[in-house]
Image (tube, rainbow, N blue to C red; front, side):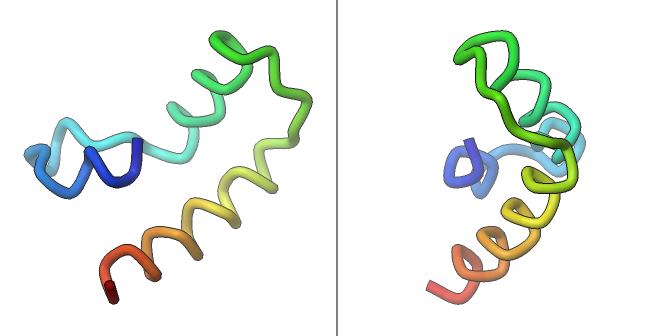
Length: 50
């Protein structure tokens, strides 16, 4: 999702909340929102650096 967001218009990018919701809905993930938020923040920084 995050790599696809690189080419998406700013208003269409996934928020941490939307990623969290999709993980729960599509993959039945058992993860907290704060964990997803921290991961998204760190991963976005790494993707932009690459």
